[in-house]
Length: 267
Image (tube, rainbow, N blue to C red; front, top):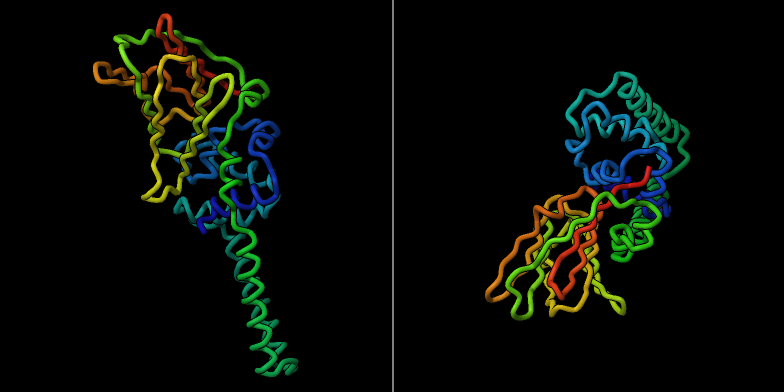
């Protein structure tokens, strides 16, 4: 497992909310998401180690080991002190087994038995600690209450929708991990796009719209497209909803229009 996925897995399994990490460290959520996706190029270079160290400290894992893994990932030379620790650890481990062998504490049969038990235990633990589909969905989901609690309205724009004569098809495509909620006052429909998408899983949300008031809550509008089309109409709103943070798109009729609300994190 790649090291940054390991830390994300650890955080989820220990019920540590990334929004809480952002609030306590004052690091924008977009940078924390970049850390957990290994997209370190999206973080200003001078802040990469600072943000990563704050994140690691907040979730409660070994900072030295994490920094060593980050250095290796970024193709940087490991620090001498860290390398020495690794060597000392290897020597201690070697001395430990030499001592065991010298004192003849275990015979070969017992050693094999213990080895098999440890292998079984490792498999059992790994099996039980897999991140479930529900865990991943909870990480991506954003709700109206999240908008109220964690975000403030950045801007609001109303655009017209032209040449409406029949049902429109709404198509939202995302090339990165994302969450879309399509809803009205009575019901809603969720759609998840995971970063480790299987070839059989779609990264495109498609829904029909007949003119009733509907809303789209979109978690991420960084690498995406939003298009409304019918037999005689095609309108691309992709450029209008670009935002590093959640966007709410409200579809209305009489007259037909699309309201775009962009949000920013509070503080």
